[in-house]
Length: 431
Ligand code: IMP
Ligand code: MG
Image (tube, rainbow, N blue to C red; front, side):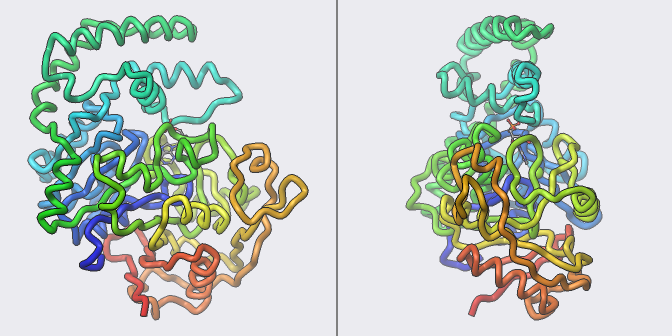
């Protein structure tokens, strides 16, 4: 990362699972603080360090670098039990992360009852289900916006905490009953559970906006880590098949408590093809058996739920749109090596829908559902890229594929990842 870029946002620029964990891990090398700004334990970041594989859900991926400060911003829905489980698992592998983490006092708690509501709501939706991760994300954000959430700072006063939990239990039990769920919240057990982590959590509570403001003033470098992807953004994604937060770069400033003028760069992470997990439109989705073939090549199974991911060709309509709504200054392309054996590659450059040719991603779900991609074909390279460490090491056809994506999206590719290991990355020099 160049010296002048002090505050960089990393955003997924497709439907999540672009490999942000790996890119954050690489970029964290040259920053002082990493902060997550939205989402919760629905994220699944897989990071490989040496022969170890780590899957993190709640803790920012930057944690694997010693000495990096890691923050969870106010925009996160915070599952304290998941969080401490991850901290303890890291500690068991010799990574003492607790002294380096901070959680916003303004972050909303995500508790077991949010997961019950998530499951009950999905069951109720039947065929119209969203395919959520079941981690309670939607119900936790609903509570926040309805002004009935419980924030980390609310634990400071035990009487206030018990009052809020009591009201939540009453409300939730009513709703679970209405959903026909046989689950109910036991208030005593709930209070005991939250009490058991109260002090440990309060000790980590900070004002993330203040910490980041001070860090930037002191000349430190900051990475704001997004979860999910632009097409899952509650405003800009394929609504209602989205998550319940603003995953895009605008959400970064909001979700940690700094102003947008503090941000210098926005790096969009994209996979060399497209995947999506859960329901909703995916215009370039492969037919069978190509679907299963690429899923196997790319190991495309969800890190959080284990669900098979849906796979398709690279969609330049999607990434051009993501570039615009995020204000991308650069792209990081991951999993290029997964395409190594394919003889021919396609890139969607437009859609046919509603009797017209669209060159922009439509907001209308009906149009998206009928969208037929217009493809360009490029030759594959049919060689391994796994050992490429410089641009010049890439086969000509791979260079041409990447150059075409840059031209279509109008964003320079800054990083190309060619494998899961930390060293399998190309830093692209732009003359
Ligand atoms: P929720 O975030 O669990 O409510 O799920 C809403 C939608 O976002 C579903 O389609 C999920 O599969 C998808 N989703 C949520 N988190 C992730 C993620 O980290 N990667 C990919 N898809 C995700
Ligand atoms: Mg993931």
